Every structure is written in structure tokens, then in C-alpha cells.
Image (cartoon, rainbow, N blue to C red; front, top):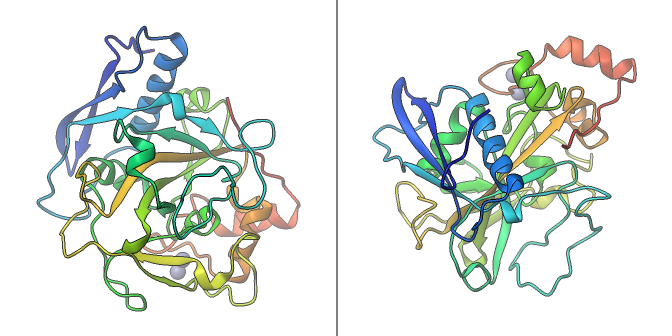
Length: 307
Ligand SMILES: [Zn+2]
Ligand SMILES: [Zn+2]
């Protein structure tokens, strides 16, 4: 294990084959450092190493060399942890979108600003699912606007974590080695999505799902007609999460660890009546699809794993 001194730890990673040292730092409020807080930092570091070699989806990106964490706001969402039903009613102004409990996920919170409540008044929470190889490069340099034929140019996010965690967006990765298994408490599969915040007026367009679910409900809290949305990037190349003028900010990393394939979860059953495939350039399922289908027919159950 890794000794976290002075509230920071160095992570060595490869981005497009080039070596980078990234400093993972705890927000300055942590004095003295408790064992719990050091442990949370060490855990996220292991997760970043597990992400593997990083690819930058865009050339000539600038990478930040530090990620500041805010473990005080790390939490698990489920019954017995942090849990609510329906739209969260806590008096906060979350703009255009409602905030539903992301059951089964743990959030690792990032430090963004000292005046969090003030800065994010009227900002909505949305999720961006991606592949493991892109995760760190997005965290270190921001999201680049993509071209979407239907909704126009911008960054796509979803207000539904159930939609964002489809393997077309959020890769499913199998936990292979014994060391990794240890860290993930014998979990077998892991997924992550970025938790973002967007100012409502920058949500350009809200539109339907594009995975062919049609009449099959994806998220019990939301209509299929509002699954995707595009964030206006105001003609900037890349949305740097550290830029105070960014129209989208990443405030946390949502991680889901399961004892079996997440495609066996009740909330994933819509995959099979919309789209799922084994082509790596499309869906990153992390298992042979015929094996997954077999387990599904045999009624294999999938459970969330928390610490
Ligand atoms: Zn395919
Ligand atoms: Zn596919």
C-alpha cells in the first residue's frame, strides 16, 4: 500500500505512450489527515491505475498535472447508505433536471471551488459514460465537443445514469488480477461514468434515446424522450473542467462494482430489447455476449459491491 504524505500522492500514467506524473491532492480542509481520508485517496489512485494506459481522443490536448479530491463528499448511493426515491427535494436549485438517486454507484468527489453552493446554484447534474482508456485524459484536459447528427454539435450527457451506463457509452471492464480483486473486494466487473454539472441555459437540446429502445422504459424516473442532451460549448475547442467559464464541469467519478456482469441487473434488461453487441468499436461489454446471454437465461444474479 501507498503512504499518503502531506495529503497527496503521485500517480504515474502513460498518455498516448508518453509518461506523465499526476499529483492526486486532498482539498486543503483535511487537517489533520484522518486514516479514512488517506484511504479514500489511496483507493482512487488504485482505480486510476486500473484504468490502464490512457489515450487522448483529441490531439494536442493540454493536460493538467493535478487532480484535487474532496473525499468528504464521497458517498455510496443505496438503501442503508445515501438513498431517496423520486426527485431529490432538498431545497437546492438544480436547474432544468431533477436529481434521482444513482442506486448502486459510489461517488468519488472532486474539489472544484470553495463556493460550491453559490457557483452551482441552478446547475443540473448529468452523466457522461466513456471508455476506460479515455477516463483520465478527460479528467485531465476536459471534454471535447463531438458531432451528433440528431441534436447538433456539443458535449452529450444524460440526466439518466441508467442510460449513460449502457456499454455503448460506459465500458464494462472485467477485474482480472488477484490484486485488483482484493482492492475491489472480490468484485468481478466495474464501470464508471463522469458526474458533471451543467448550467441550465447551456443545455442546448434535450432529445430521445438513440439505442432503439422505443416502447421499453429505460429509466423508471424519466421518459425515453429526454435521455440525451447536448451541452453548448460556446465554440470552445475543449471544455476544461478547471476553467471557471466552462459550461460543463466534472464534479465526481461514479464507480459501480458488481459481483457478476452488470448486464444481469434488473436496470440493464432494456439493453436486450434495444441494442447490445460485441463489436469493440461500438459496445464494450467486457464479456462474450453469448456467455452473458447464457447466464441471463440461467437466472444468474448480479449484486453491487461496496466497501
Ligand atoms: Zn455492433
Ligand atoms: Zn453495440
